[in-house]
Image 1 (spheres, helix red, strand yellow):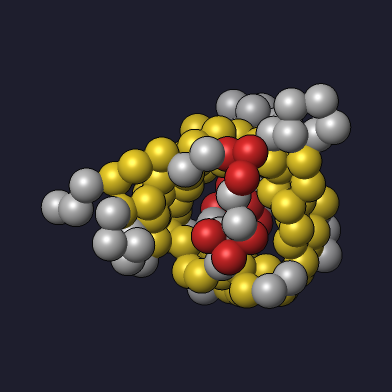
Image 2 (cartoon, rainbow, N blue to C red; image 1 turned 180 degrees about the vertical axis):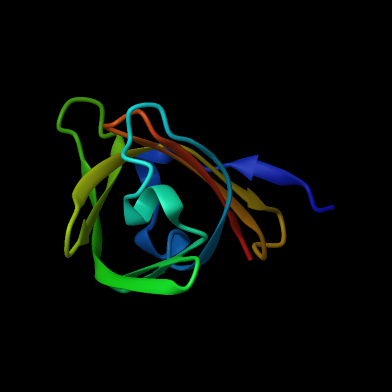
Length: 118
């Protein structure tokens, strides 16, 4: 297993978030359990395009990074046909060889997703 390091969240390059992310854990809290993001198995981020794959379905959308003015905390804004939401990027870890990444997102609804790449 490779060593991981924490990426400085105030300086995340957008390309660190692109690629296929596999959902490995989730906490729903107040989130609608039937929403595409709550049922997601894979998130694909490329340029500005977003694909959310659930069991048997794929939803298309867009994504972008937003930063708050005061602390420069990074938010991932996700836009799907039926849902637009923001998630605070609470942690991004990368392997020292750059081949594996772990991403933790905390959504405004209280949902938390842990994503792995590849």
